[in-house]
Length: 204
Image: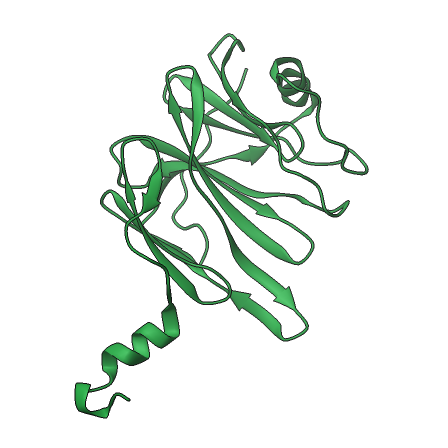
């Protein structure tokens, strides 16, 4: 029912260390109906229901995703394996802008979902563990405000992640087998970088 999705070479400029293997593609009404039928809860109210439904293979299973219905994994017969709820709406144009399956260097395939909000975008990384979808990481990565456009970054390494939010606050996280958890106190990325470059005798 769902065709395999072609591989692709890059994701987004603020995400490094993620190796995408498949890029989810917008689908037709039959897949949207399947997602509606297997999603556990009703979709949150979010204006006009014109949002895309994306699909991508995950091994022998398939990932289906939409902003309001969330992310589900189904088997080849369309039966539900796991599900996680949708995103809260702050604007009628809130939507998913990208869904990809790939490697985050944690020893298992992950699902990366980029959601677009009115003045910000966020990244969610999910992994299938048996009959549940666990959130490994979720964070805002870009924001626009009166002072301009601000982009953070997410850098993945083997069993580790460095997250810099749009305000420039950096946090190192380590993968504990279920999720990324803080490894050390947060720091102001730019201030920390400048301090590291400043000789000890020049510091006040």
